[in-house]
Length: 365
Image (cartoon, rainbow, N blue to C red):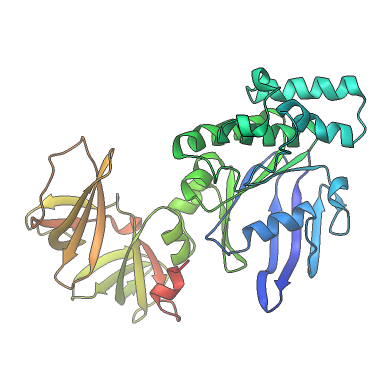
């Protein structure tokens, strides 16, 4: 099955630059996600790969074939829309057979393919049902089956789970990945849901304002974010501003707002203004005041129970705050107003130079 490459791809709609000189390589048989906030250009990129719109400049390759001037039907792709886009006057069976018939497969071959994909999506018993007789989850399965039945080598999915409720969405996302893997397809999945992308993707491209800001595995994006935006958009981070007061071989002493000094690791120099990004689960929390290295003292300002974990908001004397996440069954709950000490290991805090445009602008979606 093919890999997918785009080179120097640009697309504008009037004065709006939807994609700005995009370069990306999606590997053969990879389940790849395009992730980002609404309006970042991910759906535009998917539609360009599909041939539904044309680029202003740049090149698109599927396998070794350049396809930016090739019509959609000649690209060997299957496209699954967010809105399902099933033919309402056709049964599930007729929807699935539509692609093979359009491609002039013989009837026996078309029916064999239809049987196989309906069995794969576990809807063989509903082949006579019309779309309005199916649940949202069933309609999405039929939409995927229709794309697969047409002999697609590359599966493109545009927010395919966006209209489903949370429980069904969680179930179907794994089914779609399994189908793609079982059929050795190259799949490109557009979503704004980070949990969805992190749970099913081999790799993810994080996009912002028409650009790709980082590509990596879910683990790489979470543990090694390359920018403040990625640290904010993938998972959750606390951002603490400060300045480097000492730097030696990558070991930093940083003075945070409020005068608290902490140790960190990074490639910035003495005197530079920085932002520390610290994941909520990184902090160790102790009741009371403790004298340790890398400590921040404050009071619990807010508590939220979220099922498997408890979210604490800690307010410091500097009026900065931090979110701390603790397992809900692993400890005795603390209460609002309790004085606590937070601590963290220096190498687990990500250090970024303070952005010229300001922190809030940098992390905005």
